[in-house]
Length: 356
Ligand code: IPM
Ligand code: MN
Image 1: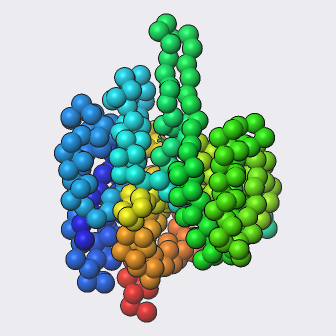
Image 2 (image 1 turned 90 degrees about the vertical axis):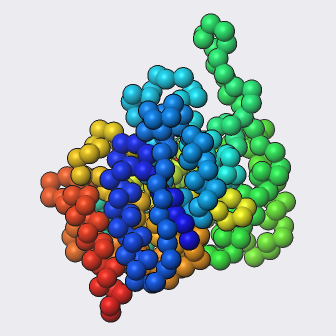
Image 3 (image 1 turned 135 degrees about the vertical axis):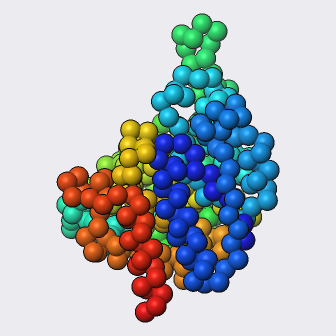
């Protein structure tokens, strides 16, 4: 098994090096044969190769079984041309690997529940999964661009039935394995794309008789997620809505620094990354929370290695660390441990659990 690590920009290096400690320990404990390679991606790749997603990195991905990504972007790239934006590289990577499904679990830990700005009783034992369509919609729709004198710009939200159907199938199957409840989020009262989304999901759901499918407009869904999040189990939605709702949902857990994600294609190839950004303001200060990336490693073992046992092992170890009252600064402003201390603490818990 070969894992390619793309640390990227900002806090990317710090979070992936904590994640690497976890990979190495798991590899040792479970006698797995894991090869690690590193590549340039994002702003660091622009600096070195003049491209956020250089050929060298594309070749390395072809030779790997899974990719762990840190984060990309930074203020120095805000005004560069589109081809050299780190975000363009990220979208290119998702598109060229056909990573159409993005899985974003929203789980609250009882150990950190008091750090959420939402009242405890609304978020206790929360366990939601947002399935975000990742390679179509307004992020990729053509036509797009500025007019010649930059006084007007446009983007196009576009989906075809094939694209909707495959994400619907993924979400329906996942719901079947969970609580048979699926909520599809759209804006069908205004957008034709959403009308197509809705009817296509309904057609797919005909073959899943046990699943209770509901639909919700995205504005209402944003409100419901905060007001009564436990009504949801699996949410499926298009690219931009999923982007926005997943940041919003992260507030329920106390910190965006806790949330991992997996992006998969039809062959099960996966790219794993925290849902938070590169946070340049806190980079290189040893304060970023490494948990989102460590849980992304857990998802990597779950999906790419089919090792649910290892996923659970890592998840439990994270809970144990939090249970010891160990928090990074995003959770506990005044009394906190550093990024590397959190990594070490989780490593220690992984060992302890293994020896139990
Ligand atoms: C995410 C990020 C990306 C997105 C950015 C960095 C392009 O916000 O993964 O949620 O919008 O998809
Ligand atoms: Mn986002």
